[in-house]
Image (cartoon, rainbow, N blue to C red; front, top):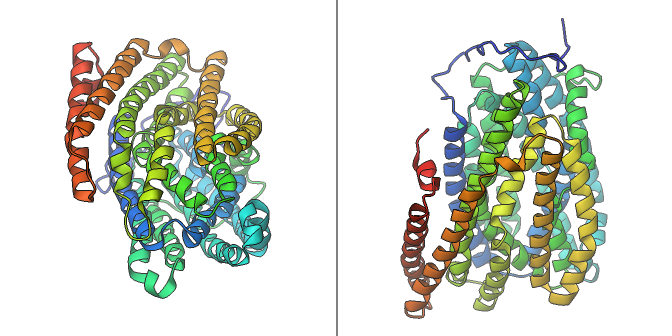
Length: 534
């Protein structure tokens, strides 16, 4: 049986893809409809994430327990990142898309089986080592725990409990790749919803008996059901023929390894920013919780407009590149970046103007007013760069679609290494606020570097950015910020969550009206693009 990959050096034929066995079960999507579906998923997941943060803060506060829980994520995340590149689907999509275009579903299923089985063995071995050396990792990485044996023991136990979740995420990611190549995103849309729901249910129903361990069990349950089980069911319903095959020398695995190795050995600021924040913040009790809360609350709107658009775009970028449509590829990336950056600026205006009222909603229980004030300052600084965090994902995926994982990873590694003194210096000068400023500077350098490299490699021209549209969006963001801040401060001072919500709702109306009127008055196409169904 031929196990070679479809040729890469010759133009790829483009016959009609073979139909899935049951196309009525899962509708296909265009780039736009896929982005809308994933943005809706991200929006709902964002609300669940906000509810999760509120519930966890209320029950555990900003103290030893939640610090240990937040710290427990770092080792599992690092193992995931360095063993499978943190995003297995990126490389798998590139490989499976070639099989799909060549109408070779059998070869694609064989490639998926080899990659999934072989890397599951490798990942399981890495997780076992993580279980063994978790105490040493916690002692070395979190300096604050060196003088707190109880906190270190708690963080170690939670780390060991949460490590297996990475295997579930990996299985779900690979299975989701098969669905995405077929332009099926429904299962992927439910993954974050179920994951967040698992943590919430664990906190609500198990915290009296298990304490902070209830959150770790929620992570395990949510990752298994939402990532591994759901996406696997979706893949099998589309006719996947999976056979466990361990093959380190198999052409499909070697191809995946070639694409993924830069993701494994390189680091990017997108990945390690949160780790840097936790590392330095561990020096003070509650510091990890405060900076992680600010970052998580910033990620709620970011996850609606950023990763969703990036995940939906990758299969379409890859298809354009593999069809040798260089101009269309460049124009598509430039258009996606322009629209996403424009939306990001306008949403940033809303976040910054309403930060005090938004953050006050998370006050309650063991999370007091001083804690809410602290995360307000951090959240405001982080919110400035929402648009940059969103579009860097598009630029990175443009490289991945062109089967170039090496350039962004080398660039990201250099930027990350050079950023360490900046994080250290700003933390010692300004504390947690200094860390937030360092995060903003780092993502600015990361995004600009990717854009310039794509331009120099003649992959994505800077000329395809819609500069006029970006100027209109910047003006709309400034006007909307002024209108929102004025409306919020004209209302009476508040001290209850109900009044917080009233202020947010009324000021949001002013924000939306000001942004929309400014865009329409300047002739912007953005409102029509957002509302357009196709």
